[in-house]
Length: 277
Image (cartoon, rainbow, N blue to C red; front, side, top):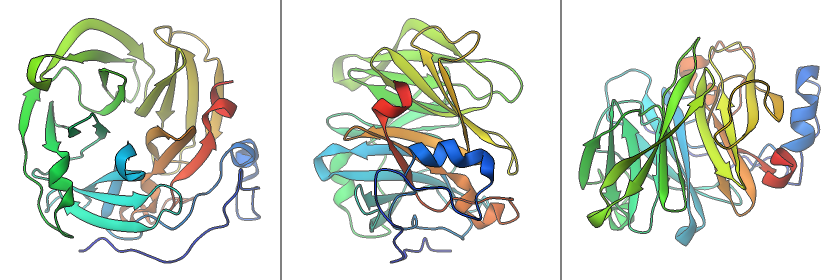
């Protein structure tokens, strides 16, 4: 089933006031977050959004997807950062969740099933629906989600009912990821993360009808109460900072979760300063 694009565009602005169909408990969330622009490619199909990255040279967001029918290789959608309009769909070289994605100077990085692999950025110039070539891959300590902050890559572990571990990697000669020995404990149910200004922001969710949490902690200190916890719509996934805004993608837009009690089909955004303080 192909990923689909749509020309439907939501109202843009610094925030999106809560609407009549929104549960009242999300009012604070929508006081902070704008609903974004066009609906994401592949909404209401079996393709399930997972990771989110910012491609600065193209001023584009990149969303990773897995096939909810578990038949086809994972895919990425490249969309305009500002409007959300689709630019193209590309096929990744492997099947699986593709739960974390991120960019360095020369590569797109993808986590999947205990490994991280990279794809040269030049591969992303291929035509619509082309399969990009895997450059190299490595086994890693965790592969549920990812963020790249400066010259470090953080790879984390999802656990439903227990804390997980997020590991720091550096890029050695040739761009080979090497674990530094530094790690931090992440809370349960983490689906995505960003690091900024000495703080870490976690996207936490599990279950199609359960609320998500956007939690803020001091970097390296994730025990106890977060500095801030924002109740968010169900099924939050990857997040990234793009031009000063926190962007969040939700998997509830997939038809795989058509019975979810609340669904999000756009990439939401909020000024990062309003989230972390």
